[in-house]
Image 1 (tube, rainbow, N blue to C red):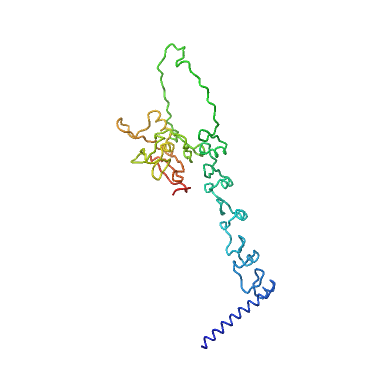
Image 2 (spheres, rainbow, N blue to C red):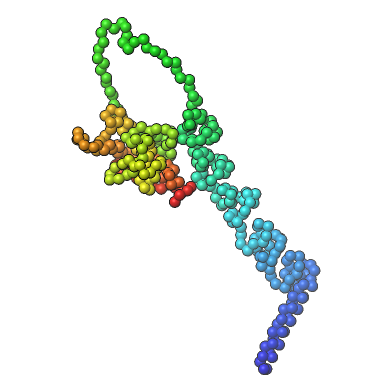
Length: 340
């Protein structure tokens, strides 16, 4: 009982001392007296203990006790751009406002998801996305963007030139000039270019900085691309070749090796392929005269690889590379706006 009574007396004395200290501090009514007596002046009162950041309600006291004032309150840690929730505060603190959030760095054009931010950062908005390069008229897929970039919309597509009047039809009086006394069976001379440039892509991106190598997405759905594949059919890659399929219809599904014939012609055709198809029907895997023939697209000569990009059916941007090893490689090149 003696020890218990003694402990209770000590606790009472300690509580009394704390209460007296608090009382001694709270009686001072000005900052100088408060601090001269070993107390702390904050929130326009004198206290016996030092405040935490959440105790302070004004900027002067907040910064005087080594804390950080931002967002209209006192904080224990310094502000970062991601802490700011309004565009005005974001700009005031030298941060960057885009995609409705505050960031510490300026965005890449491809990161912007709305037209206002895209144009504010000097990028180009078209076809529902933001790009760093100004588009050519032919890659614009809607009338609004087409006319906004000074192009001409007609026949369901965007063009760089206005519609020109058709020349009048002139009927020829006869097939053979009347002053010739006899007709001669005509001779036809075909001159075919087989230089290195015939290995360039048949369809290229006029907006590309290197159109013979890089195509950043010049495919246009409304155009028919001539080539080995039927533009109106759909193909599934099987045993070392593409076969027509009737169970799928789309533009490009590289993950499952399915493409429209029109897209295959745009992606794989080179100039020499078009010339061969016009003259003799194309290049065959076998030169024998009997049986079914498989047409093969030309493989790159030396280092003439083709790099083509397209936003495919899965909502992702893919890179297609036609290498000199006669293979076509497909890579998921960037993040997706939809899909996986």
